[in-house]
Length: 291
Image 1 (spheres, rainbow, N blue to C red):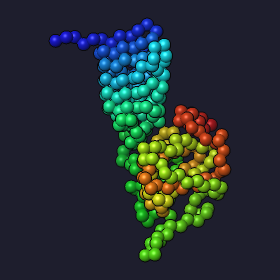
Image 2 (cartoon, helix red, strand yellow):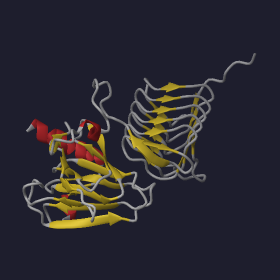
Image 3 (cartoon, one colour):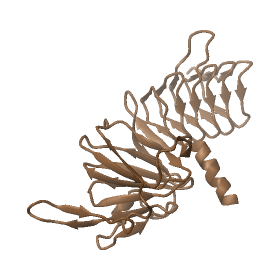
Image 4 (spheres, rainbow, N blue to C red):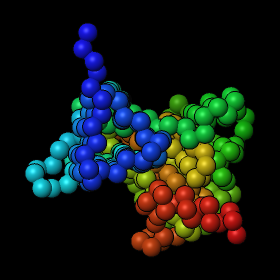
């Protein structure tokens, strides 16, 4: 029986002393592997690859090599996981806590805590940030009683709303009143439609703007995140809406082919009100809590 070949780290590579490397792993100059990261066997870590703290790379993962003299510029975010046999193309960033399923081909950035699979990789779900929280449901609309009009989701001040629905043989009617049923003064609305099923919208928060989302046709899933916890709500009826206060990270995905998402906002469009980087969002939330 032949012996396994130990990992080889070239001079010029930065490998934390708490990083673990499996057999047949080669780390090249210019690569950086953070504390508590783990690269399992049969993987080459090229120049420009940065594996952040706690990330785990499964066996046989391919991190695409850049042309000679260039940098791969691949970032494997803190606490993320790459399944066996996955391929990550150069220039791609895997967000913190994300999961790349085995065999996936990742050709574009993966958002923090997203779950991706397939060739090419598509988002199929999101990771709950705080596992082990008893019986807390991920799909929160499952606990929304039909007799109740408003329910807090336990994610910051996010609330789920059920509008009045009138059934009639001539056609159904759903109605809401301002500001009774929407908890802010509305200044703007927009519609999102014709979204390919594999695409993700949102992926941002606001400093000041409040939002209220209704899927008036078809269905889509909404992930809400307060910087500590998150949950998912499936909007699949025109009488079901969700309120996102400022400093709530919102994601919309799993659009049905006929989905039309109606969004009311408390402010006119202001580019400076958007927070588009998740790490910046978490830092802002933590700063507010320390004040």
